[in-house]
Amino acid sequence: MAPHGEGSEEAMVVQDENRKPISSILIVIAMQTEAMPVVNKFQLKEDLDPVFPKGVPWVRYHGVYKDLHINLVWPGKDLTLGVDSVGTISASLVTYAAIQALQPDLIINAGTAGGFKLIDGGFQVKGACISDVFVVSDVAFHDRRIPIPVFDLYGVGSRQSFSTPNLLKELNLKAGKLSTGDSLDMSPQDEASIVANDATVKDMEGAAVAYVADLLKVPAIFIKAVTDIVDGDKPTAEEFLQNLAAVTAALDQAVAQVVDFISGKCLSEL
Image 1 (tube, rainbow, N blue to C red):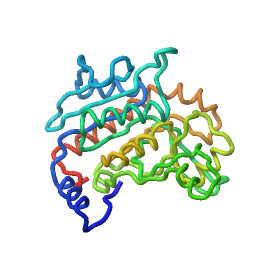
Image 2: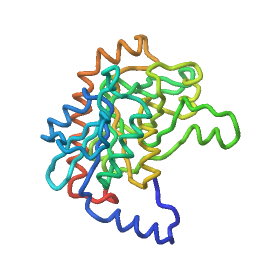
Image 3: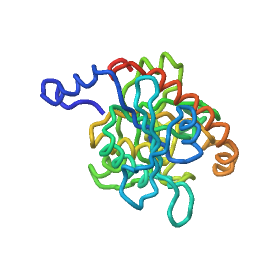
Image 4: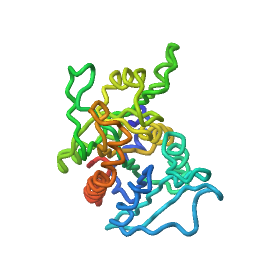
């Protein structure tokens, strides 16, 4: 999510923005179970006068931590089925609405993800383990297959996240690429695309958040904690549910560390 031309007026504006202290962050999280520990950690309050359109289930929490205004949004529960509104559509919508309403300096998409210990037929070691936390360097989709020239690249939608070399070094977190799709499981076609994306972790929201952030020119970083090993021995759904609570604690700790690191810094110092 880099500026366009170095000499352009837009690039100069972006450079100026990068030198200003970050004052407002937007944390986008897909599930209530993932969101509430972060809400409690920063003592955020639920918005009683919602900034979102009437009737949508989207939820916003907000507060001030040190010198940062924190907004946390999650898409809420599906109005018909009552489950968390996971996936790319809900993530895109709530991210777009939150950016428009709140004008954040930086987006943090935090959440759980599947991880890979091996990929590409077992020849390439990815090394993901349960509760590992990754800072994502690149995002892409693995289930938007459009086998037509140029449309194929659009379908993959590969993007770089905002670069945070100092954060990575200071917090000693792992770095890896993220692949996003709207299914919890992985079909053979998905697997081939994930291999092509060189992904270490897979989720159901990240690339959608990246698309909207890129569209509206807001820098975004992605913090993903591993709940299940996609190429492991256990069924994905079973392992995900078994580890969700414990891994959410690791995610909460990582998000708190990231927010602490961000406090008082400008974008160019990340």
